[in-house]
Amino acid sequence: MSGRQRGIALISVLLIMTLALLITSGLLRSHRLSLQSSGQQLQQMHLHQLATGVETQALLLLQGALQTPAKTVDRTQAWARMTPELDLEDEQVRVSIEDLAGRFNLNSLLRSGQIDQVTLNRWARLLDLLGLPSLQLDQVGPLRELSQLRLLPGIDAQMLRQLEPWVSMLPNDAVLNINTAPALVLRTLGEVDASTAEALVEQGSTTPWTSVQAFTLDPLLSTADLSGHGLGIQSRWYRITVQVNRDGRGMRLATDVEFDPDTAQLNVLQRRFLPSSTYEMAQ
Image (cartoon, rainbow, N blue to C red; front, side, top):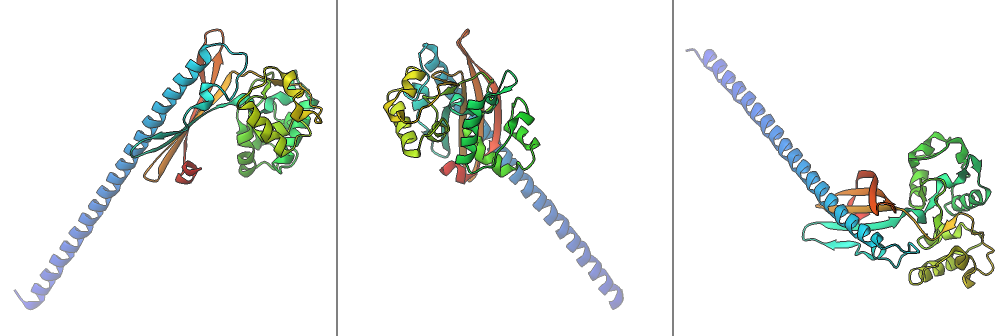
């Protein structure tokens, strides 16, 4: 074999070896990515199962707390005093139960097809407290999801994020539970300043009001001249929120339930799995 032929043969061998190395490298990379993907899927499945298990425990606690009929739904009850954080070895878990009737019910703005002026004034105060522009919801009709507000001009995701912690979409005859409403929502009821609203929340956390009249006549509200319209001391709607985090990955499960007083059972209305960042878990 001549030197030229040997050179060509050597180059051919080197090309084949290079091609083999490239193929092997590609296969190894594909295998590594497949393993990473499988690991991520397994981790998501684990978070999903953990969140569902914690949700089940919260449902049982809420179910048990509501079995005994009570005149009020308030913050002194077991469902509102559950431990928010669970001590697990490798995961961070937080769970809460919220009375959705303690939020501003967007559907209460329309009663029997008519604009409710008292509630409309409260809605205007809420928007003002949140620094949001006026929103006329009669253009939308009954709401089932907050995202329906995107039908209105000028509504963006940032505005919805600002509204979300304070509003609910309950039947239009559902009243605002004064015993579970946060300070900001109490401020929408009339001329109630921030310090008074905080004092009302603190008082209601130990001594709930047993009637709307007792609330409106409370000495803390002596100068507010509040209307009892649309207010109450009961609720049937709750949200269980479970947040789980492991190794920088997180998941949030939000479950809305309704208590049926006739059967004394909880009915799941909606269950949503959402991504949850480590930052959210730290809040």
